[in-house]
Image (tube, rainbow, N blue to C red; front, side, top):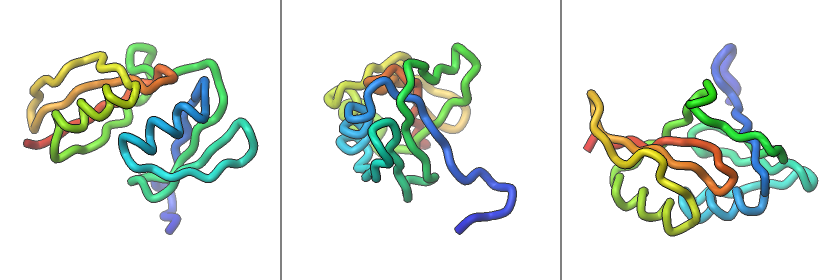
Length: 117
């Protein structure tokens, strides 16, 4: 359902669409629909979105918005990310309200995962 003036869709750059799809399928169980060789979309993952072919990356150090996932098992999610080719760039740390870590996907895009446990 589209809600007036609410965030509806998000797009991420990727150097390798197939590598991004494989990573997010393995770690977060996402599914994709391809729209040609340079775009792949996902849906029902908290927000709908897609990956577009680009040499650019998303990084909070460069001023990009940080997309944060929730996990009820923070250490298990961290291990899955490492096993599937992601890199941990900030190990688990505490903050008011919980704990989190930051990682990059195989294309170098930065994300975070948090838990209230």
